[in-house]
Image: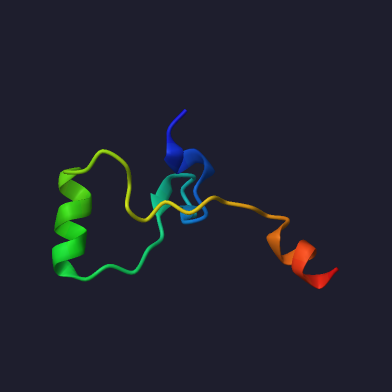
Length: 56
């Protein structure tokens, strides 16, 4: 399983495809698309219960 599957920024579009929903500038997007890194620098653990824990 890739980290993208659990990432908070992993979003599904209207066609059922998944993409990384991070606002990047041109240089960051080029680096992201070239995959020149070992781990994604934009990975954030997708925790759907985070908000609920804050409310309690």
